[in-house]
Image (tube, rainbow, N blue to C red; front, side, top):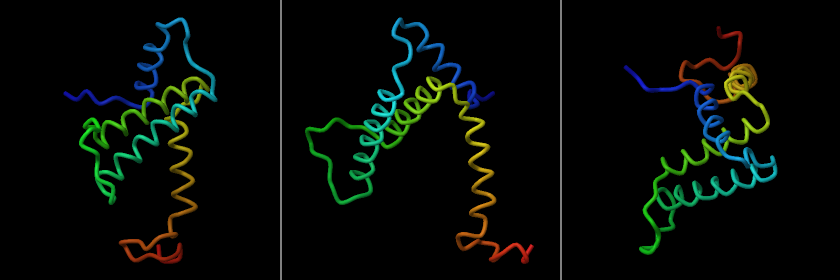
Length: 117
């Protein structure tokens, strides 16, 4: 048995959590600022793990995984506050990538244009 959730289930769970508080969702401006803050923390961790900047001994241990989770939750909260389905957005954007970028990069199958199909 798996405990993996769909994006819709994740959005519902986050919404149920937020709805228990009187404040509810913050404004879109606050949400994008929060998302930016979390993205900065992710960037810092990536820099520590993969870049030239070593972590200070006084800095708390965090992981890229943990920071990605914070970005994901912040993104879900923002989408919920704007009544946006991330599943729908994902499908629409992947469709765009499949059509716009299908031959943009060197493909492993060697195809360089549609005529190669």
